[in-house]
Structure formats: structure tokens, C-alpha cells
Image: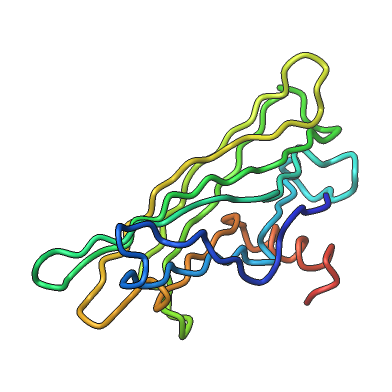
Amino acid sequence: MALVGTAAAFTLAACSAPDISSVPPCPNVVIVDDIAQVTKFLDGPGRDLTDVVLEVAIASFDGECVTDFDAGANGQVAVDLVLVVEATRGPANEDRQGRYDFFIAIAETEGEVIAKRVFPGEVVFEGNRNRVAAQEELTQMIPLRPGENGADYDILIGFQLTADELVYARRQQGLR
């Protein structure tokens, strides 16, 4: 499934506040390439096209952030995200529904993940539709310590894959 608008990193729209010159930058949003799509198969050893139940990919995202500081110079960044996922029903999907898990993680720019949450997603293929888009809306709160700003953090987005799903995804992308 082709991905629309994915890249190594995206930057959210500018933070909103009354005096934009004093507002710290927003976090970068990163759609993790090798886990930006998932193929779900029937239980069992089969891994050909006829065994595919569901293919899901992160198609795009939009968002904005707001920084809020209290009088003690501690603050937080609230990041509102809207993810669009595209799902394709596979030949082995008989119930016309699909489930997937995706995650949002907060990492320091050096790469250390400091928080991660997995969310369930679900799509329904109504009528004779075999391809649908779904929208996921989330808010992530990042507490800031004195001297920090939103640019000190990355927000990582991807699908929560099993080990077998990760191997398959990487093989499909020519990665190891």
C-alpha cells in the first residue's frame, strides 16, 4: 500500500500564543518509516496474498501545539494530532472489519523514549467497499522542565507490530 505524505520527520504548525516571539518551538512529529504500515494475515503459516486479512498505512497527519507556562516557569506542550489511516480489506477478510494497534511515543531528541501509549484502531468495510480511511484524533501532553521547550522532544507514530509483522513490513520495503 502506498503511503501518502510520509517522511523521516514532520514539524507541526507553529505553536499558538499571544506573543509568538516568546513561544518555544513545537516538537517534531516523526512517522517511523518501517512501521508506518502493517499487513495482517490469517492465523497460521500462510503468508501469500490470499492470506491477507487487512493492510493499513498511516496516510497523513495534521496537528497543532499550544505551550502553556505557569508563573513558576514550568510548563507543558499540548499537541493535538489528527492521523488519517487508509485500510484495504484483504481476500481473507470475511467479516468486513479490521483491527490494528498504533502507538504514540514521546522521545527526547537524543532518541530515548520517555513515554509510549498503544491505541486500538478499527475499521469497517461497509457495503462493497474494500478500501476505507479512518481518522484518529489524540492529544499528547508533554511536561516541560525549566529551560526546555517543545523542540527538545519528538513525537513518534507507528503501528504496534508483532515480530513477524515487523519482519514482513521490512521485507516489503527492502529493509532488513
